Every structure is written in C-alpha cells, then in structure tokens.
Length: 397
Ligand code: FDA
Image (cartoon, rainbow, N blue to C red; front, side, top):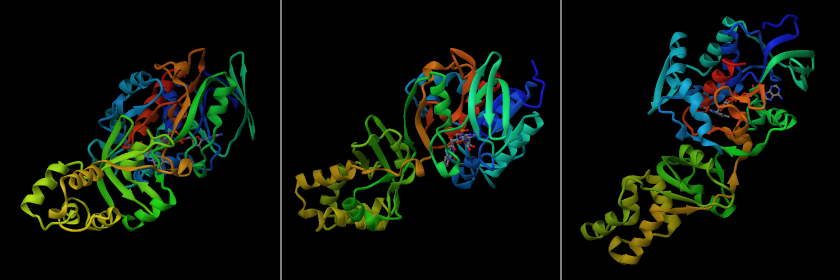
C-alpha cells in the first residue's frame, strides 16, 4: 500500500549511513515511498573517512567466520543472499574504479566519495528521499505502523528501519539512538564496547617502547583463542596497525597479548644453529635480518641482550626465543569510541529475523548495520554486513 500525504511514508529509515542508504534504494525500487532521516548535516560521513579516504567497500573473501556475534549463525543468511560480488557488480555498473590492496580487500582507486555518490544516485533513481539535519524526538507505535516526532514536525510510516549505527566516533554523528529505540520496544541489548581500535599502554611500557614509535612490522598476535598475522605499528600513544586493531575486538580489560615478532621463523632452531655457524653474531644482528633495523636495535636494547651468541647458554637461547615468539604485553586499555572503527555488541540478534532483519515480535520494525550485534573483522567486512543486512530489510520493509 503506497502512503498518501506529505508526512506519510511506507518506510522511514533512521540513519543516512552505509546501511540506511542501501536499504532506502532497495525499498525504493520496490515502489515503496521511502524517507531517510539523519540528524547530521551530511550523509555517509563514515563512508567518506573509511579506508583512509578510499573506502574498503567489501572483501571478496568475506564469510560468516569474519564476524563476531553472540549469535554467530545470524549473519549467514543475509551474507549469502547479498554477496561481495553483488556489491561489486553495483560498483561496476557505476563505473567506479577500484583496486585490491590486500587479498580480497577492495578499495576505491580515487575516493570514498565515489561510493557515497553511487548510493545517493541509487536513492535518487529509486525515488527515496534523504532528509538531513532532522532529529527524531519520539517514536510511537500506531495501529498501522509508527509515528515519529521530529524537530520539524510529525511523520508516519508503516515500516521503521533503524540504521543509526553504533557509538564509534561520536564527532561523526554516532549516538545511542538505535539502542534507545530497541529498549523502548522491549528488546534486549548486549553490552557494547569499542572494536578495531588501537591499544594504550601503561606509562612505563610506553616509555620503553618510545624508541620503536613509527615502526611497523609483521607479527602474529594472539589473545584468547584468536590470532591475526598482520602488521603491527608502534605509535607514540601505544600499539596500532591491522594486527592490533583486529585483536582489539577480542581483547577484554586485563588480558595480555602474546606477540610473535618472527612468525615466519623457527626462532629457537635458528638461534641454536646460528650459535654454531656464526658464534660472533648478536641477537640484534639476527633480528635485523627479519625486522626493520630500528625495531631490531630498539628491541634488543629493551631486552638488554648484549654480546655474541657464543656467550649464550642453552637456557638463555630458549628464553630469548620465547620472548621473540611470545612477547607478552598487557595493554592499559584502548583508545575507546573516540577512534574505534566499530562498536561490538548492540541489539541482540536472537530477537530478529535473519531473513528480514525485522523484530520477530514486531515485523514492521527493523535493525540493520552496526547497531546490531554483528561486527566484522578489518578489511571491508563491516561494509559488507551493512550492504547485506540493508538489502535483506529493504526487500521486506
Ligand atoms: P553509520 O555509522 O555508517 O551510519 C549511521 C548514521 O546514522 C549516521 O549518518 C549518523 O549520523 C546517523 N545517526 C546516528 N544517530 C542518529 C540520530 N539520533 N538521529 C538521526 N540520525 C542518526 N568498514 C569497512 O568495511 N571498511 C572500511 O574501510 C572501514 N573504514 C572505517 C574507518 C573509520 C575511521 C571508521 C570509524 C569506520 C570504518 N569502517 C570500515 C566501519 C564502517 O564505517 C561501519 O561499519 C559502517 O559505517 C556502519 O554502517 P551503518 O550504516 O550501520 O552506520
């Protein structure tokens, strides 16, 4: 049923981000009268800042295993029905140039703006209206759907889609709006925390690592039963780089990280055979063969490793190998929502339909994108979830 008056819509979507715009176009193409509301002055701010300004818009190797959730099977259906290739086909139809920077990770060649412009064009072609600078003050249920009180008057709709994102980067417009709506309609929320976020260090360790600041090296970092083999970057604030961002989503306060600085080596074996073949070599020289020179030097000094290998007893070599293979670091915390790429937790998906993203007990209220408890790994998975959950809801709302 198409709605009639100027303030009546079939579908109202709150949030003109990745998920909201994609959902609006999908529902609009079904001839639904669609309105997207956002309190920000511009749509898709996170899209514009993503991927260093070039938006890592999907990952060709995305599978449900790339997502964290208290209800892991939930994301399977939507991800299967709208795949990375489906999004890539859309990107191709718009003639957007892209490149694969790391295996599976697709980025715009020019600018993230291409993706935002594409979504806005799709909304336009589908007849979906996008209204900015509009805050929603109240949401009430009516006999035929929902009534919204906004700063500029009342609106009504049959279907309401919450696409207001998580709490990360409040300066970009993030709010807890979606969680409040969920609470209002009796839904359970899982505790939220910052994910894909750099670690901060205790002052003493930060000082010790200061000489390593700005150096990046490939590591294998482990926390609980998860590990990631990616570059780590030491910064003046703490630890960052893909390896640290990835593991931060699994880290809980008080946990230690085990960092293998030489994941491609058999460290103890190497050191024992070097002691035989090159007894004059130092541990610093060995490290410099595998790590950036500045890192090798600073790390050797940090550990107080001096003298040639021939002076090292078996136990010393084993100890050094252990330190290099399982360097244990206890972060003080994370930088939090201020710099986090994502918010973990949120609306508990056990109350939602995995086919439509609608609330099971309220089939005209939908939650999509980051507001729900589905969080991807680094590398384009979070946008893939935004697209897939948006299409699932847009085809039903
Ligand atoms: P999103 O946050 O995009 O949109 C929510 C919208 O709702 C916003 O426009 C906001 O203004 C609006 N809103 C909030 N509260 C409101 C209210 N009360 N009333 C009205 N509107 C409201 N992912 C990835 O896959 N590849 C990448 O390269 C990156 N890079 C990246 C970099 C950085 C710096 C960040 C912070 C994040 C990423 N991400 C990413 C993650 C990705 O940006 C994120 O997963 C998606 O933007 C989530 O899409 P949503 O539409 O759910 O929320």
